[in-house]
Length: 279
Ligand SMILES: CC(C)(COP(=O)(O)OP(=O)(O)OC[C@H]1O[C@@H](n2cnc3c(N)ncnc32)[C@H](O)[C@@H]1OP(=O)(O)O)[C@@H](O)C(=O)NCCC(=O)NCCS
Image (cartoon, rainbow, N blue to C red; front, side, top):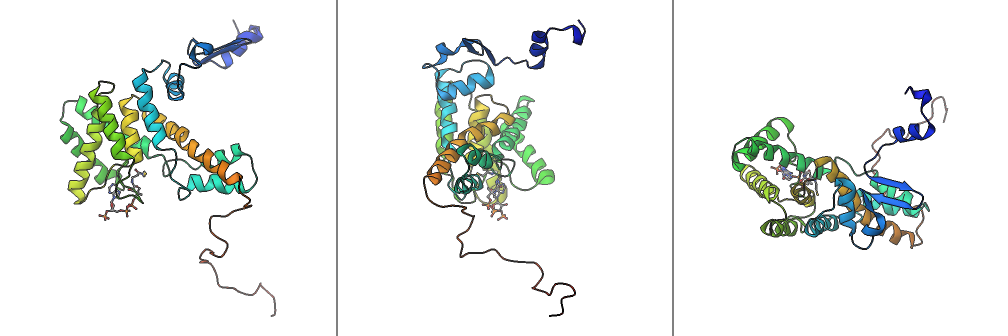
């Protein structure tokens, strides 16, 4: 049937197609499940899993996802996203505006390292699947990284914490879930081997950070790298909301990034007369 012969309904069904939800008056089904069957039985992490993956997770899978999501909710107003949420709230905008402003700065540099870390682990996992040992796969990937990509290995190091207090606990829990057979444990092994090899090359330990550790969990649970960034945004949104709300309860208005008595360094031209002014 040619385009102009199609009914309005056919045109609409062609326009948006989704395997996520069915909705019509009186009916809401997510991934084929009636919403009334999900409500009260499916936790928030399990709902995130169902929405993203199309199937219900086991209770243990949902618990591990919830652990990763819970660990990264906040890092205080030193983190640009949190400071932005608070500054936006002092401008009198709505809580959604404050949240959106904050979420908009989460990307490659701030909060996005989990995606890069999981891609890195994935390259190593693929090399192992190709038949080489874990140690060789890590060495080869790091050789390439230091020769071609340079900079900071994703998922290692922290500006403030000599050891990120979240990471060892997350890895410990991942290993407990692996011991119970919930996940395989290969991404925890890969991250540990990267940490050890970088320490050997740099002559000092540069420990796994929150992004590297949550990438381990998301990888163990089978999430692709690009989704880990979205999961981080969901997680950090909790802290962003809490800070935006707390700030909105206070009386400050138009709060900038520095106390008013501290000004920035001016690096431009010295003061000079306006052209053609005689004095
Ligand atoms: C987070 C980060 C910026 C902190 O860096 P920092 O502590 O300020 O580190 P510095 O730039 O002062 O570097 C200190 C030393 O550790 C090294 N180092 C720090 N993080 C490193 C990493 N991820 N890979 C390799 N070397 C690293 C630096 O090369 C430097 O070595 P040098 O003394 O031989 O020059 C950095 O570790 C990083 O970019 N990590 C990767 C990205 C990431 O995972 N971000 C999420 C953070 S939660």
